[in-house]
Length: 496
Ligand code: GLN
Image 1 (tube, rainbow, N blue to C red):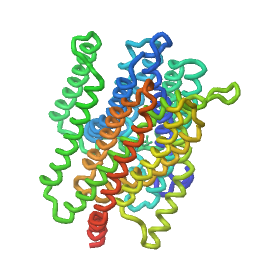
Image 2 (cartoon, rainbow, N blue to C red; image 1 turned 135 degrees about the horizontal axis):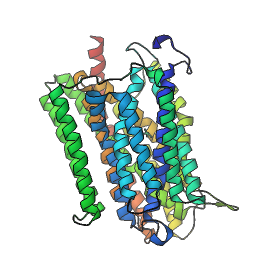
Image 3 (cartoon, rainbow, N blue to C red; image 1 turned 120 degrees about the horizontal axis):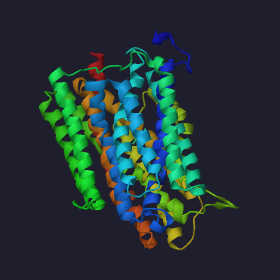
Image 4 (cartoon, helix red, strand yellow; image 1 turned 30 degrees about the vertical axis):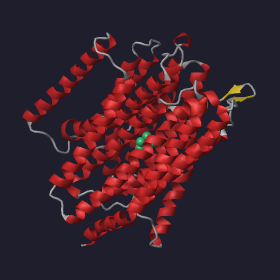
């Protein structure tokens, strides 16, 4: 019946349920995230955590990296144990509890709140995204447009989050802002429950249920994990185990990269792939590399660029103080404005048969993102000379980052769904999401070098990111001469 449902801007009402819930979840996620580094580096006597930039950025990188990493078990739990509907609901509850804990003005509970948000988001985010696609039959051509609307919902949510939480932070204090994130997630949950009938039958049970014995084992493993995590947290809190976030971030970056490579190799060598499939996997590997580098740069938004916004950007308009978080909303605003334009551009180029290959698009996205850091190179030079720079420097950077994002992020997702060998589609998506994790953690490690005491180093650091990303981008562009052809092998297969 959903086929004929056009009540929500031409789409089934279920899309309103899912995009609406995800909008509020993202409001809470980005609203809180925008303040995280600022809160951690704020001096203890001013109500912050008094951490160094290196430590705060490393924790931030670990946090954002973990959010995406836990999407893997989160997806598995939905597919095998409880179904997506329940995973989204419980995930939302756990997220809300996390934000409520953050709203408590106590430094000791802070990290516990973060752990809740990580676990809850792992359960909610991948599953709500997958359920969007399940609203449509395989032949329903509205699917792409549905994801565009869904991505709009994400960015409207983050816009509200930056706006509200940023405003509260400056005018009422951090914990009020974290509380607002909890309220936002709460609204999302209420909305979800009230409109649940719109997604009746969608992922309401596990798609590939386990045998009763295996199910028992899985629950035991989950309980074991939670107990282990709790014990580890207590040991770290009581200083029995030392925890240096900078060291741990590096170890985790290596660990996740290893998992990525091993998993990729396991599918490549152990998956019984034919020659064409292997070539397409080669193309995908480069896309994963581009994605990792892209997020490592892009994710400076919440850390080094955020601090730049707070400390080196003019934020007073008369008596009004622009909250630092508001600069990041440039990303959401530009996404909302530019997405339709990009959708149109790819279609128009496709019609003329001159649409660039996935590999080329991703390489270009990386290079455009890198050019945003050239802007920052100049802005940082001004800042290093003791000036507070005008807000348009950051806005220009975010503009270029957003254009880069639109060249790469949705394109890479579509590449993974199209180029992966069919029987590994789900697992390859999981492997791909690890590139967000790796990128985020590397971003955190790098952002740690931005020491506010040594402003004169800043331009050089931004230039380093530029050189690195442009170099990788150019290498990928050259390799795409080959891999672009390999991608076409997917079309051949579909045609035959
Ligand atoms: N802003 C998007 C979201 O939150 C994409 C983030 C990402 O892909 N790393 O869903």
